[in-house]
Image (cartoon, rainbow, N blue to C red):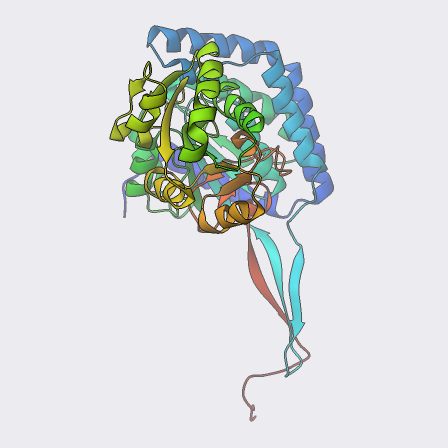
Length: 423
């Protein structure tokens, strides 16, 4: 038998027991619990801010990157957004128990599919404290229990949020263990956590590429990977240049430290002479560092030469790689080679080219004349999201409520047997 930290195993076992209770909760009880969680979080905001201040101070002393600090900080706006996300989840249709694909077989049996919870979902994440409440709310509404293992940089924030949510669960009659928290920053516990395959049904890592690869390589439990967001903007020869600049500025500069921010811009050679100087002027004004291929630097000689590594990079900063491509096919080939199947955008007035892009680019979100920043559960109508999956099984792209469930077959008959039965 595998040796697992006893305290951790006890937490996982209690979470598993709670998952069976949560799976049976009515929609009304779950919704009231979610509303209570939102109200309690707002009520406890000062305690959460105090805990978050400790994490931010520690993070700055450890020289965390600006992107990490940005993800870590909680303020009035972000607490309000976290509470609203919980209320949004409460307002959404409950997927649990939904019947679909009902059909009658020639022998008279009726076969259908019933949507059911996954069980215990373990979220392993870095920096963002809002993931704590988002994951808790989504998992609860989908009838799951959640086991949270946040990063050491957000430990105090995450614990304060979980403590607040526990108060609401106790008051609403839902088991507090449905939102379980790993109360240590000891990295060795992570290895033990990934061995708890008798208690945990799914692991979702959210964070840097190193964390995700470690989880994928060491887990005995199914993993949905959320790899880096190397997001592209392709400016086609038939692009509206004003639109392209708007999408570029929003995608690159509105919040550069998130996974749906643009990292690379591809420009058709027929549009490059006109478009690149305009785009560069705006990017320079916004403080963006540009790195370009030789063809780009022929037009913009003042920018740095892009390396091969630049096109693979998820900068999460005000840096962008630029490449001039000969045609549409070269743009798609670039995305296939360097992309991460997260989010890719085309700007074009050509219906033929846009439809080809939708067909040819197999990223989790493909956008035509729309910002990469829409690659988000809330913006796509899912409410709060558990993350953006770059794994095609069983979910791909922003994961909302339905992605936190699976389906079982339900067979109904009136005594049919597969073989003739003799007594």
